[in-house]
Length: 163
Image (cartoon, rainbow, N blue to C red; front, side, top):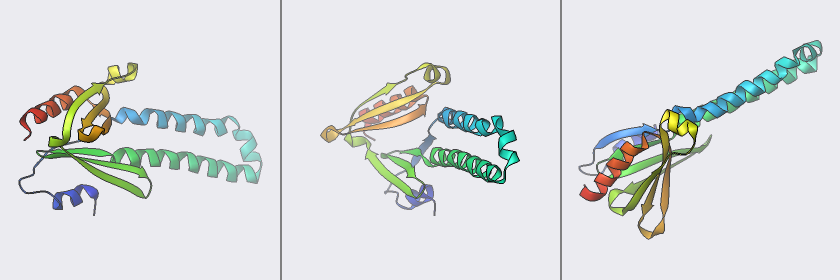
């Protein structure tokens, strides 16, 4: 059963999903650029690799590992998400291929929120981080969120209303 459906079964009384967001797709730029670079390196030496049998095997293994890395990054991006309900934020993070973490933050625990958009890419593609300060001095960072100021306004409203 997927984690998204699993939380639906664990909903609390009167809880409704308001919206769900993922990290920005721009986050995949660097993994894709690395794959293009690492896939191009053997192509520069293609004559050498095709001349010898071990070269063909090495080329096959190299390209397999490069594209396996890309698949891992895409899966991590796809399975990292944030669900905002009328009572809490559910944070799902895929930290490794077979490791998944789910945590939650109730709006009543939030003391303060701030947003940060750092770098040219963040300004051009309009994404950033949201830092949530919680009771007890803990902090949670929602990373690479598209249009973070909208989420910031929502969280500030939630803090005032306390739903």
